Length: 433
Ligand code: URA
Image (cartoon, rainbow, N blue to C red; front, side, top):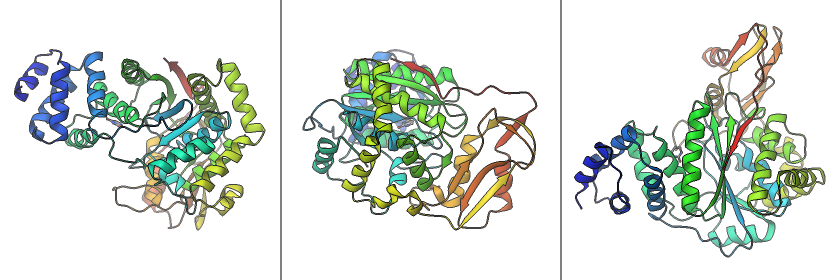
């Protein structure tokens, strides 16, 4: 097989065969195909697309490019969820304790934050002593014993994706639905769970800016899951404003604790409960959504979910006292209340900008090797559609350094106002299966 013929075929909008896709991914993994040829094929895929069959085959070949985790030692159905990333997204921290209290197993591998989006591992590491690097056997033992664990990636999962993603980043070939779908799904499939729930976010702070594109991506991923025999569902959710009220590692842990105890913000609680409903039905713990919702609410109200959270922190070496009293989590030196300079209805909140502002306080990384300040971040006091008077508080900022004029100006540019009442938008737009 000559790789140049494969590039030629895709350039001419033809469907690649299974063998051609495998030849490509094997060649990416063992580096026998040079980057310039892969780049040419990537661009042809961006421009000419892939069929559902090609996309699923690409995901399968990528999954098989490295380790595939075998979770069969864990009893019962193993669930997984994945978010395409957003600002203030602490869903796994609250969802894990709640669904495991209902009897569903969650064996979750999470990532770190980069740029404007946070990462679950960084959030967990704001708890003193918390260990995200469990050995595979300890990870499985923990899931068997207490029902859930959240760790960093073990083994070498999907090396082909690492190579392809690095190339896509520098060749303007990131924004292609078949390439994004196969990249995300190859990693989910390699993580070994039985069911997958995808939280596909749309809006200004998300990868997909419109609901339509988010649905196309969700359908492409559901199609891959189905073709490879995994029960895969998706929620389309709003990222036109931060999820919940907090942005920043320890602040988000605190909000997740409140949510597990039933005192979380309305939008975040709704997203967590909707995700939980879908996952309990996927995992055959509940017969339908209503039954699932009752189980989830009972897990929260009875305190079982909170006990689960404490157990996980204890098993992974973290300081449980900080969960019992979140004021013991890292605290910033200063708290500044940012007052509105205008009045009107909040029309827009640029969530991506808030993510960047939190990063600039030290709460996120600009570069992979940067250190994180767990204590800093923002606590939002307003949502889209709220009526605001001048001097009402928009947010409390938690910081260790003096806020610069540039930071303050950027903060105020985050909000736009309208004289007309704007309707709040639902956090969960649609569920796709
Ligand atoms: N996230 C991924 O893992 N891959 C992509 O291609 C885009 C987002």
